[in-house]
Image (cartoon, rainbow, N blue to C red; front, side, top):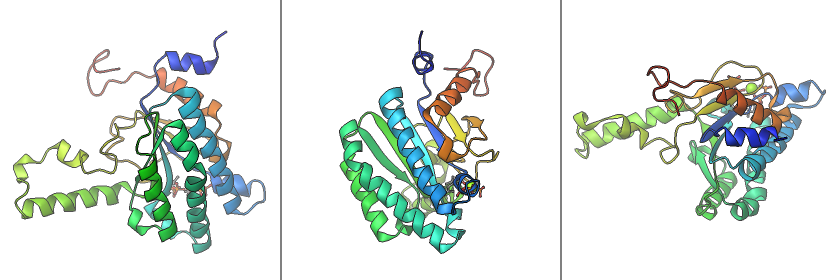
Length: 249
Ligand code: IPE
Ligand code: IPE
Ligand code: MG
């Protein structure tokens, strides 16, 4: 008998899955642990998932929402812990990423990150540039409104200086300036922990993404949960505004 993994692979994987990794704090609270213990468990879940997506599934693009621009509002100790954890995660995984052909990208305001994390990120992006298996984008200090505001300001500056004419502005003008310019739009966006919102994640890129919500808290999100989400995605009919049978992949 074929495994569920084999079946979803045969049925056609989405090119790009994006994950809103939510529920670490609630996972910890349910165990009487401090919130940061939930983040630690969340990092382990992320590690497991990246390995599974790249090596078992053969997924092409994966995006992980790790820290939003609004998450800076959290208590300093929690933010500091998360920044350390992210640095540790990237540092520790770097050799494995290079070995297994994972290319790391970061979407977000990396200039706002603590210096040690910023340096780690820049080094990891450079060292994994040749990776051709899994394209892994980590959204770090990322907010879609901030991203689109920056793009507008850049375009306005180009128009003001004469490098660009207002009538030349098209979707491509915006798309090519997004953090995700080199990555196709997500086909499937998954959010854990039962919240039914995007929380400022990929607002432009999500235009035709299929959304999947699960009550599972992020530290409990196993590869089997991912396969379940993909199977649900494969049962959907994508129309992109056309009629049944049109435009669907
Ligand atoms: C997601 O878990 C991780 C980040 C947003 C950094 P939370 O920390 O939001 O966990 P809950 O939502 O409070 O349970
Ligand atoms: C979204 O989760 C951001 C990340 C998962 C990194 P939040 O926990 O910050 O979202 P809200 O505040 O519940 O909308
Ligand atoms: Mg949350």
